[in-house]
Image (cartoon, rainbow, N blue to C red; front, side):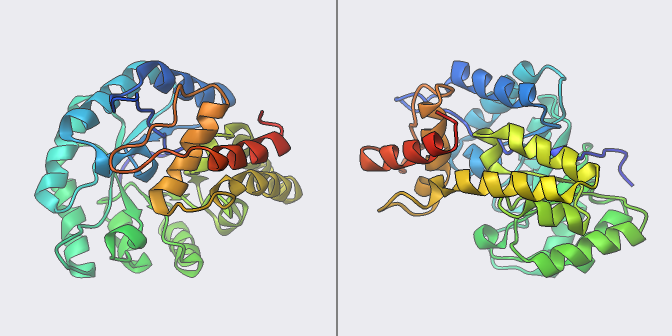
Amino acid sequence: MSDFKISGVVPPVVVPDTADHQLDVPSFERLINYMIDAGVDGLFFLGSSGEVVFSTDARRDEVLREAVRIVDGRVPVMAGIIDTETERVIEQGKRAEALGVDALVATAPFYAIGGAVEAEEHFRCLHDALSLPIFAYDIPVCVHTKLPWKLLAKLGAEGVLAGVKDSSGDDVSFRYLCQENERLGHPMSILTGHEVVVDGAYLSGADGSVPGLANVEPHGYVRMWKAAQAGDWATAKAEQDRLNDISHIFDVTSGLVGYAGGVGAFKTALMLMGIFDSNTMPRPVKAMEGANVEAVAAVLRANGLL
């Protein structure tokens, strides 16, 4: 079993871009310090919110190098090594290890059609080839393979996986996984990626959360975690309800889909709050402008963030 354990709030860090699509290091530093100062328990770089699939190898290395430098050991650094197939993921993992991160996060393989058998062998290959703890990232909407809870529990019990970052939307599977992980002696750290139902995940036994909205409002997620740890479920629910009001930055815009509306809302909010210098998106995604920026601003203003 892995000795690496993590719990609490571990935001998937949004990456700021300059107008010419370079890494905006000063904005990156402001965001990282903003979340650490709020009391987060770790940071996850190069996840879905962190432009991983838009990034060249050189860009991934730059993001991780700057992240490790800025974090400077204050919290654990988790790095996404997401790529299409096993050999490419191993290459990403070796470079991330050399850059000094603390744990690795990988999805099932994608593009080439596979299933649970291939996913199991994939994670075993990663464990054999890499030295850092590995978290399975369950996000079937993007990779088209749902990681079965029984498989995840088995790999955790055998020490292949140190944890799971669940963004599957399958609350039944998630609950079963938490229960089985407990029966097995809690070998894995299980984190939810569903930012609008984190309180329910904690009640199910989650060890923590990976909420994208914590880039914009980390304090509420930190307070919710502390309330859940204290068994104060009324406060946890109240914090979740307040955060959900802020999450409407996703649905007040028009004409946007997917990454443009989701991460685009994060970047626009961070720009309006003065943390990012711009809301530039990776190509080919267009940045929010005009009425959509005003709509996000109205939500932030209504919730005391502007």
